[in-house]
Length: 112
Image 1 (tube, rainbow, N blue to C red):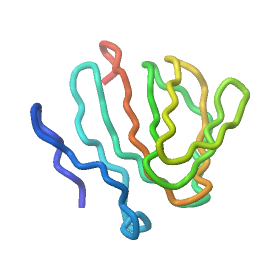
Image 2 (cartoon, rainbow, N blue to C red):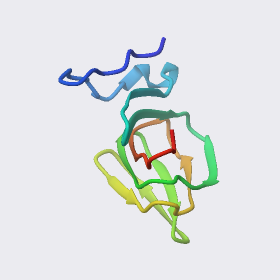
Image 3 (cartoon, helix red, strand yellow):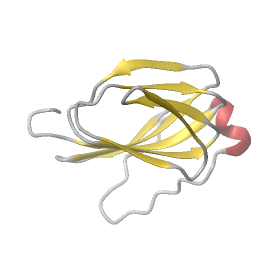
Image 4 (cartoon, rainbow, N blue to C red):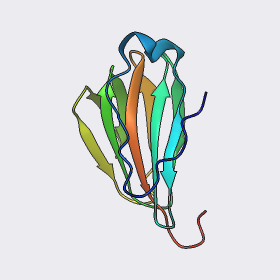
């Protein structure tokens, strides 16, 4: 079941999913003209091949562990870690454990 989008001024809870993590799916929390925020859920072993995003992004690990490859380096992200990736930089993800992350994407005009 998808979460409803968060309205301006509304609180969204992003606590760890814990035991519910294995059944959870990614969900867009909101999308505005210049910003999109997604709770990204990846099961252990899932890979997102190298790709690019037009705008800047941040990725914050909420639970679990993942390897994030960017600039030719692979770094392990754990709960509480946050990474900024510049616009257009190729990056890839590999879920080492079931994990959930908060993904923010700065949208460029015309990129919707």
